[in-house]
Length: 282
Image (cartoon, rainbow, N blue to C red; front, side, top):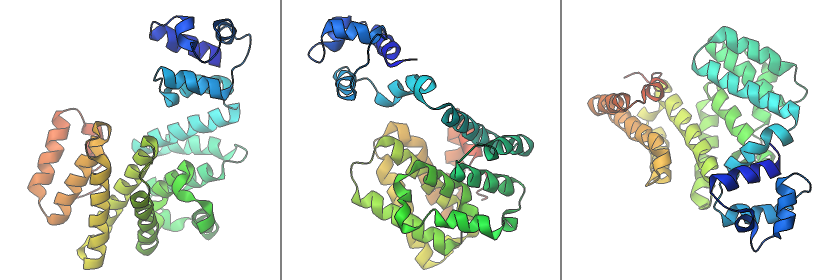
């Protein structure tokens, strides 16, 4: 879908005339040419139109992906989504097939590293990952990489957490918590990425029973508090809030309340979400 096609689609969905859509920003004759793909529109004018009519920018740009995103990037995104889906289903054979396709893509080093670790995790062979691969993963989180603000590195960390030492993980998550505390204008999409990462971290801490020591318990409790702060009064993030409360019950040994949270979520259709918590054994 072109920019003109996308503008026409969202305009018709809102029942607006072409004049109403562009009024005060560009002339109607010019806008008509944009919708009919006879001319382009500046980024500034496009942004003004989207903001004027409260059109979600992320949703709008999704309409444009097939037309403007390079084919190679479309393929990598497709394979990434398929990898995540098959990994969640623990479908090792299908995951391997998608990973093979990832490795023939030019570039996309981080996605390739994720694929190696994902397969090794399902095969219970994390300890067999070669040292060169481990070194390459660690290098992605050097100070100059700005990993906290790069989605592809956040996904890499989430995928590779089981192979990191607790000391390394605590350091990285500590940096993330400090960043969240310092920055009050983080976008919702980045907040959700951080919430997923913090959820994974708590799962690793529980598996390793690190929270039993006083020092580690402080780190775990700080992580839980951060999740609760980020999700306060935000309906879209409620499932992460439930997880934080659930996890808080676990480390307190309040398994009755933890079970109640699971049962309640299952009752209201969140069985798949709760299933992803099954690695945490009570």
